[in-house]
Length: 242
Image (cartoon, rainbow, N blue to C red; front, side, top):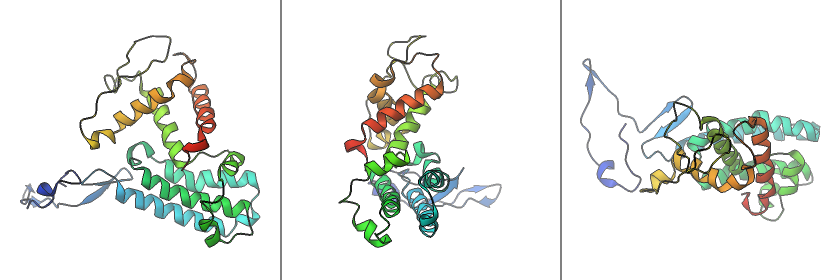
């Protein structure tokens, strides 16, 4: 596979020579799957987004057939097990485009709307998405949107890896402290591709929410940290959710 920028026709149209290893030709492919993630030549993960969206559609279609038999508490469990688990898998890596997240979230919102407003058909629920405030239903189910899940997973990633030897130098604290959780250095992005990287997004999201969990210290438990982040994310949902 040859990686190139999306708007770089020079590499895209370049004729690549054949590569041989031990007299065996190495096949050149436009994309391949590694550890469950579909990697493409532009690293924009559009193909993986389509795969996730297709899986979510399949899972939600099955839930439509049994939604009338499910109490509210069970709906949250079922959505988390069969839908959210698909979306949340390595979401830090592939969720680099908001448009892809929006498309997936609309399908989840349509099901939630059809569940709480049973008079609406599946088709009418989709058409009513822009007219009905989905936030009260998300609060009732205690669910985060796909966009919010990405934010939460980025914060969890930084919290877990900030002292890891493997990631030493990956995040550089401005004011190194043994007791307090510090802000992180934000390195100026040189390209649009770098701005989509895990390093850039994790650092910027951490600094954006830092003022809310700075009350935590280095000895705070991971559970306490996650609860603080979730409360703040839900509190700010007003104009954030897709």
